[in-house]
Image (cartoon, rainbow, N blue to C red; front, side, top):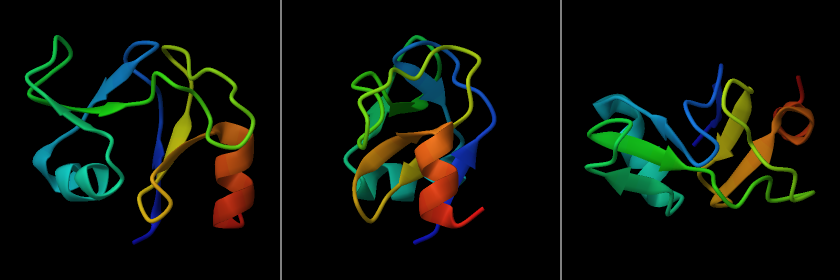
Length: 82
């Protein structure tokens, strides 16, 4: 599964996603349902899986569903090879 880039986080903990992203989010153990931000959301409240940097509202971040990790913009670009 590819590493997915999100343009900006909705809150410091959750970002709403559509049904097309539910499978990779579920595979990564990051899917939350029935949240305040939407029916489906990616949980990124524990920060980057590499450096621990928090993912703040408005910041870009990445989801590596194979590794089950959320990544900050820097480590997401590195892992994707951007």
